[in-house]
Image (cartoon, rainbow, N blue to C red; front, top):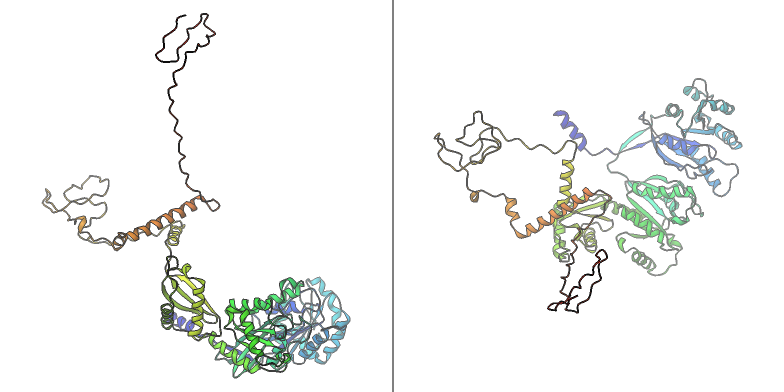
Length: 640
């Protein structure tokens, strides 16, 4: 019992929120298409980075907290873009971000290909010599031991002969792995743990969970610029070229003693315009980030205005129950006209009639205009998302709404409220138990959602309302009973009668009536007890009250009412129809009973009218001529 109490106390306590500070930083670097993103996903045990045979898929450095399953050690793992000698387009910015992440790294995993050594590998190895003490040489794509002999030429760079390397392997050889197939990954994890210093890690307990934000929108609307503005550093690559961001870029910052986690996603274009597989995976990860956030910052270019793609993005976030903030970015480039923002806000709400609750804010991510107001709005929305409402207060409010504005009354729209409860917070979900959920019109459901937002202090967040039946229908209950009876164990046995004297007026099943001899005689079945009379033996038989004085059960009294009889007949009819469909099989069609065809009555033969006698033809077998027959009545017969 003591163990049970301790277990209940442990489960009822809220989970501990912890943030780790001072984690070591491990950076995976190398030339393009050597398997850096594949190794990154392998160490994280999840598909975080986009992997594709196309070189140069990764652009922004992707950071995540890594925790090995067999160890309690934690560190930060970063995947970088490839190092190139011939650069064009965004390649210069990608290489610049890669070299900047190497400066702050505690361990650099220099990843090379076992098949070949390129001039880019040679050049990058020369750049890494200044950090040779923290470089770990790893040879990828060594799918089998036969390929290990092909990679011994990588030792000429000297990264496998240092003092730190001998701590990992006695012979100073590099690590041969296969990131795709998982070969020698355990040895790599042990090497990483031995090369890092975990003594500077500080565990900080958080009073509140961080607010999770996700920046969504079309390409080239300023999402990466806003991320860099909020983080206070150039974390993401910013360019005028659309589609710069591919992998989600994560960052953390603090605002007014509140912790925030923000995610920059790729621009979402229409599905008809997505032809590249890399862009397809980028859009898929951007849409999936909605499930991992609390509030969606929907970026809209103020110069272009609202488009159909913006409507789809906002509708997807609202259906998931996330808070939404419409941000009109690049407002500094708009003409300075009086009431221009009010006009743009009214136009946006006109197109989003069902999302009038979402705030609309002007912003300039490049200059920082409107950032403070945006952060204050985010804190307000998060407070409404996590608000909890007592059931008693909710019941009183809902009953008042229905009494003030009753639903339409009719034979098909009549329903009653039984119970209302808040089922979840963040997202805000409510369940109303009513007698007939199908009778509640969609307009009245919208009315209830609006009342929940306005009267309960949820005017800036979406509300998910679900109507459930207050009791299970007879057909569903009967189906459940049939399922239990058809189970392998069969139906549950009936409870046994308690031992002891039976109450007066009842005779046990199979017992003999008084006055009958019981010795040696077999009884075929239960016998009914007669009224009290003296038997020949002098004993009184069991008294049975008359039928009129017996107490009828409540179910029988309820069935006596005419309306209950009609309802019972309908339910029995529905059960019979369900059994007939089940017996016919899943693919059978319901057949209508054939009505008997009316038999056509044969008309009675009427007597032919009187006519002149006609001579019949003589029969062939008889040699003599036959006499002609008379067809009329009352005519004389002619002689031959």
